[in-house]
Length: 342
Image (tube, rainbow, N blue to C red; front, top):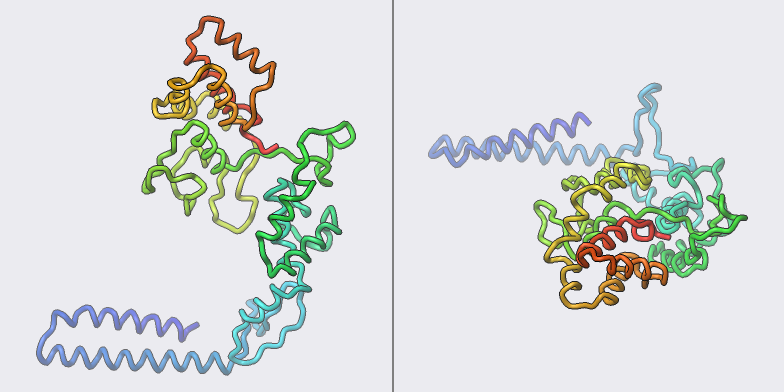
């Protein structure tokens, strides 16, 4: 570490010497160029020395308390033989992708399962250990085998999950499985993630969000980093990406979220926009067409008979049609059918 620090200091000194070369001339320039050449030679020698030392030395770290050298070791503490100069990262990669190692494949499979099913086979999703077994060991082993056999192809596992009967179950419950949160006897309804929720509102209304520093029409799911200012995304629990823990993303429903959707200015502003989808439907469609478009845009279905009857009664009550449709649009955007995967 001292050698690396010395090389860094020498490189810094070299940069400083090179910056003044343009200001010199004659003998002063020749002397400065000679010093630069000597400094480069010193850096080359020191770098070569460091490489030789590393090659002769077995990889490892000093234990702070005992001051003893500790050899690299994977999480399962299996013995690893490292030769002097060998890069231990190659051995780590080999251990990670070993078909017999369920630590890596299990972690990835569990994250994928939780992403689509809202509850992992192991919970918490990052807590994989012998004393916290999966709720369905057979399914766990099958998905692990499929992941490894496919060459660690995430898309292959996604297809298996999405084409499964389990994923396609309704969230509607029966008296016997109403309290089930472990065995996937029904789909577990979950709120849309923050970015998806914001994009869904923008897509339904036809009014995109503006993100400072990004082109018009950029979607929230396309933002490359969490530093982009957005009260909506922060309120709805986007991840700060400070750690690798899945617990950073919050999926709970909170009172401030409901108040923002129901009483905030953001949703009504998009609903009333003259450039939005509702304004276009009101110009070109009749009542039944507008109602159907509103339902397809928000809850992806046609209105039920009782819903259609209530809407027609509101239209016949004498209130301005535009206001009735805006209220309907607002109500649909605040419905559970819109905000939840179910």
